Image (cartoon, rainbow, N blue to C red; front, side):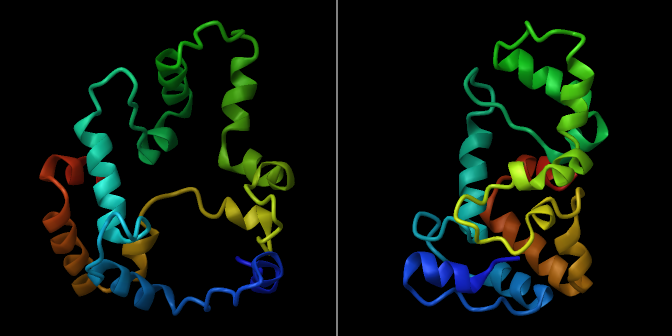
Length: 167
């Protein structure tokens, strides 16, 4: 969904290459053995960052949100987050509209205003609000590649974090 010509225009550098097909890209992403501090968007980097938050999850200044929980109970999760942030004074009459506005369909409909695209690098802002579900990576991979991901993730993160993450 990136406008590679716009990226070149903004940076003066060659745009990033087109990604290979998703299954090929995910397989390489899973296998890459990179320093988490140097490659934050690698699997080691993502799991390192998440493991750091996981280790601090009981602190009052850390709140983990699982996308599956938002899908299952957006209202309840929003109320939980509001409480954690000290926003208990939200007008009860405004609450249903806030919950609706936080839904994928509403965000997609307001993509021109909500998509994070100040430089205009997205070809389609509505496509930023892509699917609204988890598991796209596993769906794109054959079972053997999913097993390799699971084994690699088990090397990089504690089992309780992975159980929470993959539920």
